[in-house]
Image (tube, rainbow, N blue to C red; front, top):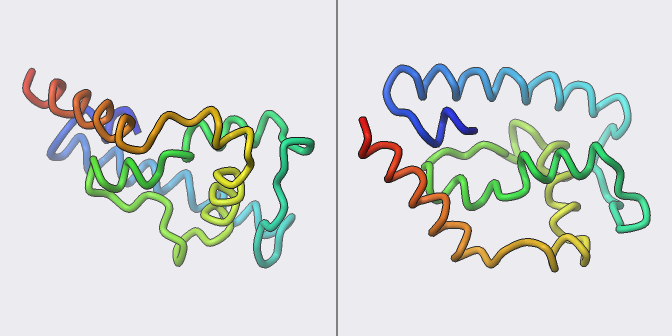
Length: 118
């Protein structure tokens, strides 16, 4: 996501392809554990993988708005989408997430400043 957010043109396109290339095997691997949908994630069952997944994909709606890229497409990656959505519903996670508007402002500022330097 760093390259997608801080580059443009061919470099950005290559980073997007690489990201999707990593999401595909993740989606396929999840099918072995969760054949249909990930329903239950709660604060008592959160593990390191959940934390990592949320830190990488949690703000996917902000990324869509700021970067103009639908990363976690529910049709392409239903299990990844289901997992991230379930993580977003955990009350302790909700408490720790900065407000949506602030995230949009920060992500947008980083993107604009980076692109201006080119």
